[in-house]
Image (cartoon, rainbow, N blue to C red; front, top):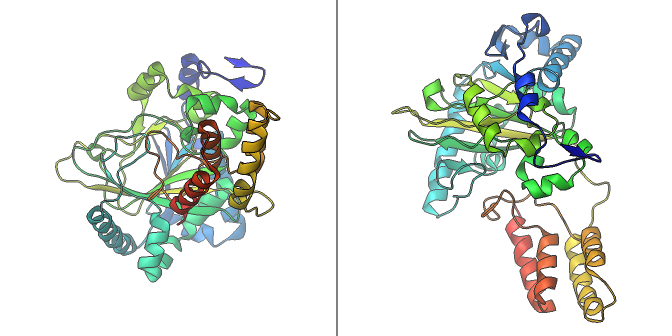
Length: 388
């Protein structure tokens, strides 16, 4: 239920989910789609490339995609988003080499919504591809179709990130979830955000998957629950057992071919599936694209502020001149209170969905009475972990 503009653990009840996901997408609602499969519109990009070169036609197509992602089923497939799959193969070769290098170095392991080690994950595959093969990067990310769907949901100036996920035969499914931002917070933290911010979270990012191989259903392509992004309290609800059970009973999967791309609203209930194949190494590049608006107006040196503030807070606390609520407010004004963006290779979400923040580190140091020297050492180490 909702209380004074907030959601709680019981928000997003099952009846609401069932009513929303019981809808059927009509072909007339997506006139530019080539087909609708299990409530998911499929767009034949081979037949539509000329539209992207026409300003008006491109705008009309993006408006349809935006409706699908928001008011419609929340997910769409771009068939043959890459006309030349040789570009995909070139990137795959780089990613396979990166996986081998990182395994040899003993890195990786932590993951979101799946057991550590259940798959091979390349954090920041965007930067790694660019540095390893700049020309290949240009050919891979220089894709007007991908750019158009991102602009359809986020507007111009969006920020691209990506993470490769390689699931081998026997790889287990993820738990159903929503994604970044609020989907990467604990239930307790998510409940602190007012209801209107839950709605905002869904329009701040776009999720996508670029298929690096053919993905029949037995290989475990993403399980999806169309229209579930419309459940208002869904960032709380997806964590409950009865919602997870409903998801398992009603989710659908879209088989993909190499070069296809699937994009969905980050609030859509989804989960990678079981790879029950005998010989398919399912590789997808998971793009996570952010709105340009998710930034502060001024650049602030928060590390310098933390170094200056910590001794003052120690003195004020010892003298009884500041209480716990005032300390929390002061830390909140000075320190970085959000875990992202970070370098997930060196600052992984071990033991939770997000790494420790600068603000949490300072609060912990104050609570445990660390010396100034000990705090500064930990602060420097924290900053070093987050550098790309």
